[in-house]
Amino acid sequence: MKTLLSFLAMIGIASAGSLKIDNGSSWLKVDCKATGHSWTAKLKKFTASASGDEATLTPSAAAFSWSFANLDSNETDRDAKMLTWLKNPSGSWKMTGQWKDSNGQQYVKGPITIAGVSKEITIPVKVNKSGNTMTIDGEVWLDTTDHSLPIVKMLVMSVNPKVRVYFHLEGSL
Image (cartoon, rainbow, N blue to C red; front, side, top):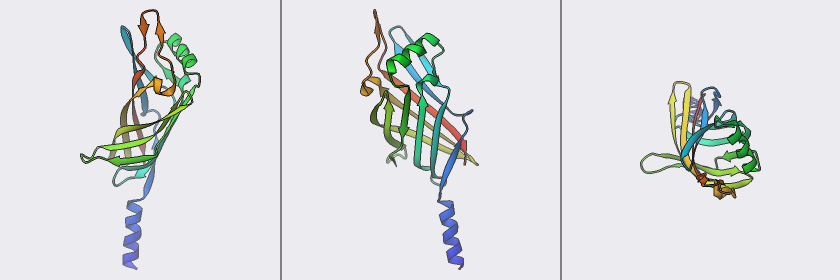
């Protein structure tokens, strides 16, 4: 009986936990560049979920979804033009796999859907736990032409189709 209780306790320790995302502490940003200037846009509202093994900090599931209408570049006119350029105002990403490399770097992969076009991406992430608080940070470069979006050009200016996407998720277990 004691062995059975020990076994059940071990299963409980290694069980998957769900992260309750704190939207006030979590964020997603996109760095963009154009001829002569650059800007950062912040996603004001999104839905995120993550779960995994609390002891090893290994994710078992993760997903993001958002509306590009909530992406704020601090310039209303640019934001409106971006929505017209995107044609489809929603985006999403869902984890389909994860692994660590020989140096211990954690990676997650899955399809990201932008403008109705999905493309598999790999994101290096850093997962930390302090008490009941867990954070997940990641960064990836995306090429908007991979999602059938044209390069924006106006007179002598053009917008670089490669954008840096980075995020910080924070929540309680």
